[in-house]
Amino acid sequence: LCLISSAFSSEGNVVVGRRAVRRVMSSWSWRVVVALASVASATVYFEETFDNGIGERWQASEWKGDSMGEWVWTAGEWFTDAAKAKGMQASEDMRFHATSAKMDEVATTVGKDLIVQFTVKHEKKDYAFCGGGYIKILPGTVDAKAFGGDTPYAIMFGPDLCGYDVSRIHVIFEHGGDNLLKDDEIKLDYADKDEFTHLYTLVVKADGTYEVFFDQKSKASGALEDGWAFPKKEIQDPEVSKPEDWVDTKRIPDPEAVKPEGYDDIPAEIPDPEAEQPEDWDAEEDGEWEPPMIDNPDYKGEWKAPMIDNPD
Image (cartoon, rainbow, N blue to C red; front, side):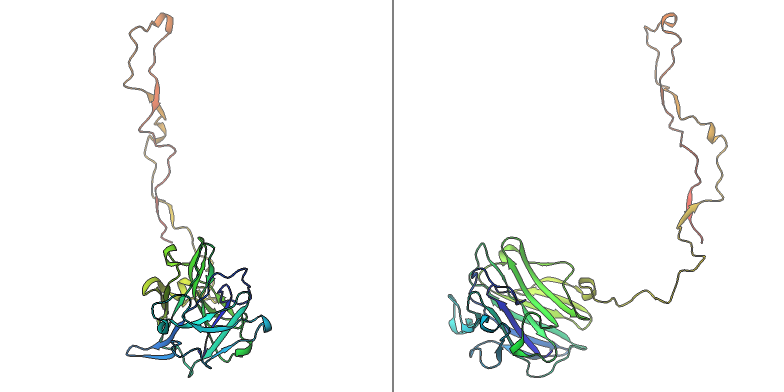
């Protein structure tokens, strides 16, 4: 992992390549930390608080030429402490914004937990608000001047918010040239979509599990192979074929069962034993009285041998 980056259209979408119809937010307050942790300790490989400005560390992309917007160092339109609230802001309407920063040293996640954490503020949230706040971790060497929406990345992480319908946290991993979205969405409550600063944390553990936090509250966790289309730890042996004498039937009729004697003589219906001849019944006029027929409770239908587990 050698680069960490942010890329927005003026809507705030990380996947650059979309233009904003109108401006819906103005301030992105970034506080970024990337760390790798072993059992005993953690090493911070990238940390950015913007306390002293954007500086030369961040290199703005020239991907879209004259259509690129400027990143500015600001606390936004409102804040508690201006010095502490300053961050990097996508400042211009109808422009693409993309920037990246290189890690100070090469890092590897082999045998270690990976932690990606940052804060972002969508300052001008309203009912028509749509915006993302993603951050990307880029593997290998990347041309910062050409960095854009099609640049390969290892992880993309952050909020995706739009009106009433979309409120989720994206976690996308690259594997084998494909960008793998999570099988099910990591939902945010509607109350989470506001104009305040929020802390997003992704933990990818060495044992193949993960956890996503929103303001230090867990939103999703589990095994990576269960949440994304990663290869499974175990697969069916392609060299093994089904035996010719394999039996798929789990249960069979009991071959030793015998139909009870007289079973077929049991009628399906019998005269109702509780029926009584009406007092005004006239045998000469009405004929011989017969009780109505009812279902025979002893009748079990066509006899079938009971089912047993197939010994084969």
